[in-house]
Amino acid sequence: MLYNSSGWIWPASWVSRLPLLSHIQPLVHDKPDVVWWKDHDGNRHDFSVRLAWDSIRQRAEKVPWVSVVCCIISIKDYDTANINKLKTQDHLRVWDTNVNGVGSVCPFCKSVPDSQVHLFFECNFSKRVWSKAKVLIPVQLPSDNWQQIVASLAPVAHRRAARVVVTKLVFAATVYFVWQERNARLFNGKARSEEMLFQMVYSTIRLKLMSLRFKDSVHVHRIKNTWKIS
Image 1 (cartoon, one colour):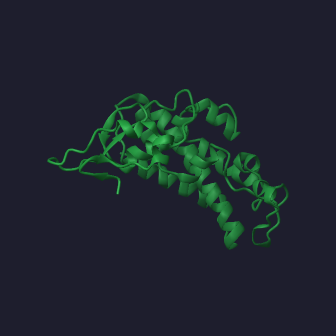
Image 2: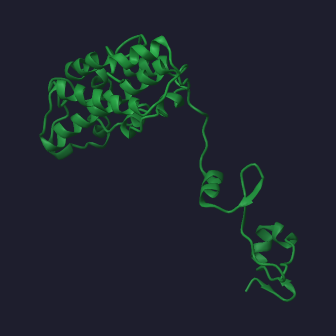
Image 3: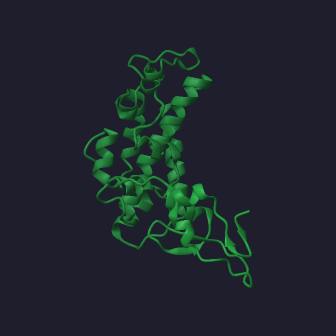
């Protein structure tokens, strides 16, 4: 028991460790109990799990590429790629892991060690898929290296301009389907052609663009023609 008609009955060991306990006001018996949560800024709110988690979670400085990662198309593996955590075999080798007995070479070209840098887009297979896809991008990108692409998109990624949105979608979808294909070949022994991957990128983005609305402009008309959207 921690409370009786006389007030709080805190264990002495608790009070010695937390002197604040002795200053807590007695309970008011004529009112129903209410659960409150004080956030990390000291503001009081109705309790919720979301608020509790937001108060106790570890915080870090916002990274410059957050607007690129928070793409309007939800592609989980694309987000992961941007923080360099994809489980390519160069990462797994740190744990001396041999996935399903498969060697540590790229499952596409089978001649270079499997790594994220190689996968996006140094490998000839993924580079050809990206070459097909980037033709549809209305923004000039500096190179085919995904890190440089992210760096170039970060300053403008928060914009809702159609050209920026399409560029982010094309990049995100290409990364996602290349990674999906990599896993299919590595773990399931199934393979699709470059053209099939490109068509998946194209159809995915086209369907997404059909659900979006942009302010009418010359650039928007060009984008609609490119993606065959009436």
